Image (cartoon, rainbow, N blue to C red; front, top):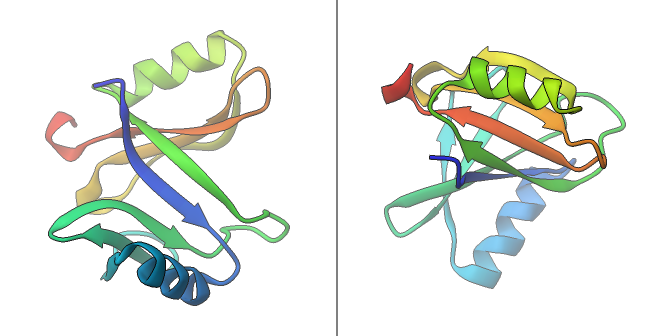
Length: 120
């Protein structure tokens, strides 16, 4: 726990990113239907380690977002806010993938929190 567990690419061109990273690193993909928008998992062999999706709102620039695995999302979310983090995405369920939230640290860097499903 408390280590980077997931890497997510937000880009207006998911298909182009899939092609680029597939050719660059040999990553394969798999569709995932657990969210409100189309989402594609990145895989290396059988290991899933990240995903790619279009921006959930207009105006969000392309970027990578790291998610830190936490045992209790609500506790970590509240603590981050008490330490000066600002909320980008309130805690939400992601179907069988657990729960997530997205914040910005006091310096403005974005990060995600992820509570795996076994810890719900």
